[in-house]
Structures are given as structure tokens and as C-alpha cells.
Length: 165
Image (tube, rainbow, N blue to C red; front, side):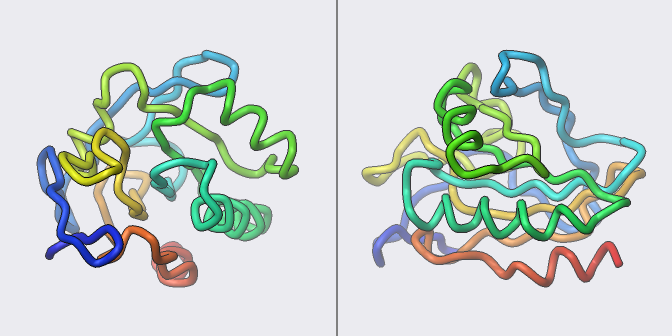
């Protein structure tokens, strides 16, 4: 699948993952500089909401919508992953009243972007993450994946929720 930014094809760096693949375990940085583990086996489903930057309107909307949906989920943990610095993520969450999801930054090693195949390798957004959503079941398998064809478009919000209900 070709990913585009404003109509121009962009290169994704890293390993392409597929449904039923093991979700790579990646350590990211929380808004309080704590270590956050994403992927692998956990006691709940993981909805991994990936955005280029919380400083853009579409990314902010995507994060707000997943925050609203997460409030009703008892069997899932919702993450938002971006390259934003943890301090910026913290400010965003405080300003927007985001408290139902866990924000995680991939700024140190770009390990999430490479492991999940969503690191942008070219375009004006080179070095950021492509817009995507992954759902990982408690056994650590990817059961849903959407990499938005056009980075400036929002993902499907209901499909990842349906796979865990």
C-alpha cells in the first residue's frame, strides 16, 4: 500500500507488520519521562493510536476521539504514540483534558516507528511517524492494522473498537 502526504507518495521505514504477527515490544517515553512498554503480551487489549505530531489539527482530533472512546473501555488500554517530546505531550493532554489514554514518545530511538514500519523516510515529515492504528490482543498478536493511505486523513475510529468487542 502506498502512503501519501498531500498526494505525494512517501517511503515508510522499518518492518511491515501484518495481522496475526507478534506485536514487537518497544519501550517508549511517557509524558513524565517514565518508561512505557507497548506491544507484546499484556493483560488487556492495546489500541495503539499513531500520529505524526499532536501539534496538528488532525492529530489532535484523532487523539481526542480515541480519548472519548477509551473512557468506556474496560478491557483495553489506549496509547497515542508520536515523536513529540514528552513535555509537549504533557502540555497537550493538560490543555485538552486527555486523561483516558497513555501518551508515549518515540523521540529517543525511533524504535516504535522502525519496529512497526511507520517511520517516515522522506517527505517534509521525514523522521515523524505515519498516521496509523494497531490493535494488539492480550496474547501479543496484531489483530487490527490501519495505516492511513493519506497522512492528512483521519483513521476509522469504529473498526479498531469493533475487533475487541
